[in-house]
Picture 1: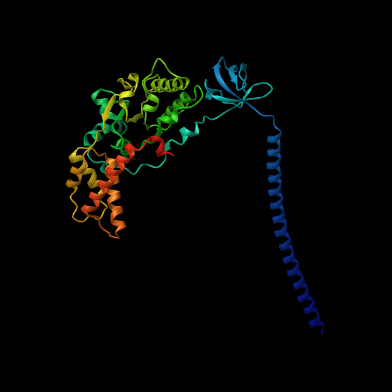
Picture 2: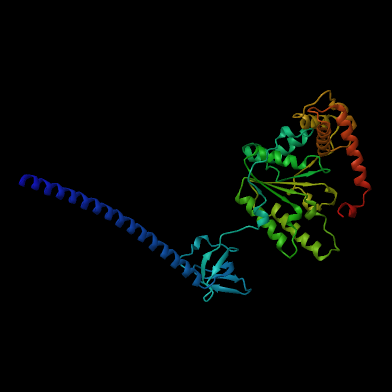
Length: 395
């Protein structure tokens, strides 16, 4: 009996020991969890305390560096208007400070405490085309001469600059595409952007026109600063005649602001700052009204005329627009003969309308009759557009 009692006590002792060890492990796990939670809450308290201190801090003034006198004296023009000679914080990197930079100033001492990163106008930042255009030279018909000239002036200097160094010449700075609407000027620019790995920046000339004095010129400066920063790059200015029209002696205040923007564009195209890996392509429907200073050599060194397509060019364009269409007994040369004076964009509309006639009749193929009807419909619509007063079109 005594032996059994001793064994029972030993068993109970072992059970209590295991239970105590289990409880100890549980408590240790809880302790580690509470410690980690305490650290997390303390870091959150520190973050909130810093946030509160930031909110309590006095606001900073924005100024522009005008001149650097010596190691610790800077001439700064504050946002309020006047200029001051101020010192700078030891935390500000002196070697990065340049005239024209925006800086943050202490409200009481006007000391420079921070360099504000350079920013561009949203209209300029949005002009950068991130994705490469999907248009290639194979998508352009009837412009073999124009393609060769724009590749020599824009594409080759970016891809093979050594060719020009061996010959001993400088490549053209800019290319002006001139021609009627819908003849493929924008397509040429997109194809060049597709062929090169350069950053493609597209802006419409009217976007550079602003209401207040100096804003348009600032946009032009930001545009070329962005192009230099993203070099190699291609700047495509569409409808350049909206800011590049010939300057007149008699002008309104709005015309004078447009002229200021033009003068800034002229300075950027042929100024002191080089445009080594920045190529300029401009397009216009009205080359006759452009300012002579814009057309002189040194700015737009090569002017490429993009005319209405001739007979062979129209056949090539029709082949491009119909290569994915299901055609049945269609003579493209016959269509090309009927569309004399049509632009490439007009021919694209003709192909689309022909396909719409096939869909209307629930057919999966397009016939010659569909194209003939599409041409008649286009000509009728063109007559209506010409006879309709402009104010009624937008009523």
